[in-house]
Length: 335
Image 1 (cartoon, rainbow, N blue to C red):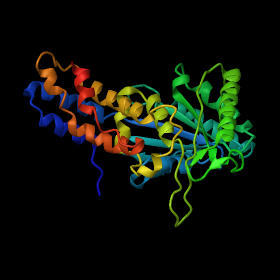
Image 2 (image 1 turned 90 degrees about the vertical axis):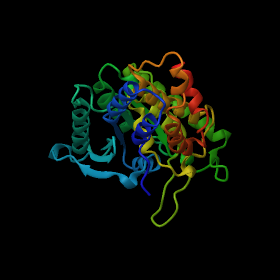
Image 3 (image 1 turned 30 degrees about the horizontal axis):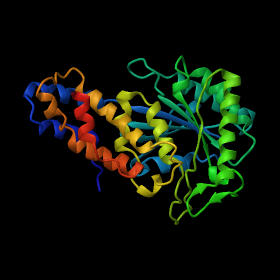
């Protein structure tokens, strides 16, 4: 079944709205501008850290176009295209000196690329660490010496470090397999690991980042996908780190299997925060330059009702059902 496109839904909402043609025209032009927004994420990490399982858990990879760079120097980088979302899967370090030098050069070259507007092509670098190993030396080398020095001025907001395989961080001990969550002893271990990673990066680069831990789950051939843990948290951090005007891109591309998003640490309502982030993108982007004063404001409050439902289905399945209150949110924005 074809997935409903968020931008088409937005256009239909506007066309069916009780607004004059001039205001509709402005809204539709803004939606066309949003349609042209693209998100580029570089995903990197050492062999065995779980990049592929993370990508497959987060996104609807059935529609992905897979390719590699045509330049022989960048053929190590795999490219996955999902509508307006492009994932650049790059090897980490730890494959030998010659390979490491090649990988580092390719990453630096990709980070230096700019889009048609002269802005950095890569919006966000997601570095995945293997939570099941104590030896993160090559990962620190990748982060501290290759990635962060080449992120430009906005270093802090363009990198996310995520520790995968939280379930086997203590060799499978202290993981509650029934609840699919860490027990207290493992939580303490993982929290300390997050602090250690944060401090190591801060000491080496001066950059403050907030690592998180999660488990992408895994899927043996012919078997069902095991349930991830903290995947909603990971998505929340990815969306939050994405430029506001681009966040609607994720609605068309997230994995809509509810089981993938069910289990989280619940330190924050990641679902509600993700919904707000994406709604910010939709509402701010579509309403730019539109005069919605007076009585019209009340009418516009209900314009994006179907859009809200579409986001609810995409993000709601991610976060356990957050369809409600979209109209009120938009109405409040315009009032």
